[in-house]
Image (cartoon, rainbow, N blue to C red; front, side):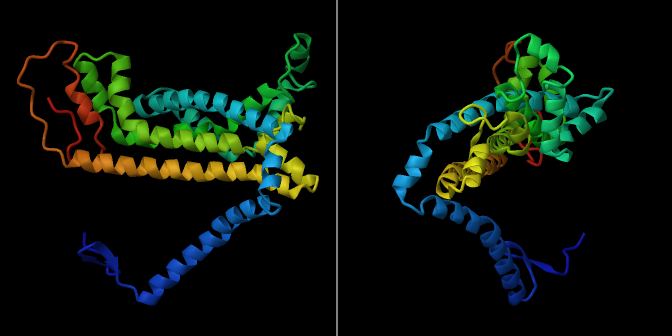
Amino acid sequence: MGIPTSTRVGARGPQTTEAPWVRWTLTVLALGFMALFLVLPLLAVFAEALRKGWDAYWSALQEPDAWAAVRLTLLTAAIAVPLNLVFGVAAAWAIAKFEFRGKALLTTLIDLPFSVSPVVAGLIYVLVFGAQGWLGPWLASHGIQIIFAVPGIVLATVFVTFPFVARELIPLMQAQGNEEEQAALVLGASGWQTFWHVTLPNIRWGLLYGVILCNARAMGEFGAVSVVSGHIRGLTNTIPLHVEILYNEYQSVAAFAVASLLALLALVTLVIKTVAEWRMQREWRALAELPPERPSAGPQTAGDAWRPATRAAALPVSSPLSGVRA
């Protein structure tokens, strides 16, 4: 297949043949869009938070209600993210590596939080666990409170965030196939050894990326948490809910000061994502440059017989060195 007429191959790879003014126009439009809709709002948050100086900024962050919101947000993320991590890995492994009845249904259910409004998700939990809900009377008789309490916030957060890890891993595992896992099992590895030494090294960067997105969404979730929290200051307000209350009370500096914490979280997420992608690309280039692996001259024990497959498991699918070598 030939090279499209709009491109040509140069010393630095394929290059477009459009006029310079076209390239510059598209570049300026893209940068202008990013500056207007991404950079400018981010700068506005910090500018408004520091409008009355650092003293007012720190005073807003040191309020007891602000600290309570921060603690609840961290607690919610600390519970929701590990749960979604376990579910995402298990679901991705089942969907990508096995064929079973209900596989299409499971894939559809994973995408459900993407198609349902977070507010509707919160209302569903109120319908099920609320005082007038299906399980409300039974929970009240046993002294268990879910709605307008921390358990309801955690459940709502888990619901809206559980697709992120699974959706990052499913296409990655499907592209890698299961030949390496089968080779490890044939060579004597147990199921746990196969996962730990073969599957996990292949998916670790996709897993990290999914966890980062899941954590960012868990800390920034507003709609579902707003419905089930009850907006009780110092008890059931997360950072986004606390920002809304401060802004509605015309405490704009305090509201933007607390909002700056979420903005910092977004920046940290971008940095971690960039570093993870850079390290992944560097590792793949280093593996692609390695010479072919030679068979070991020494004898191998039954417990070590499967280990030659583990190095191939760390290789990307597109690498010319990918595959299991005896």
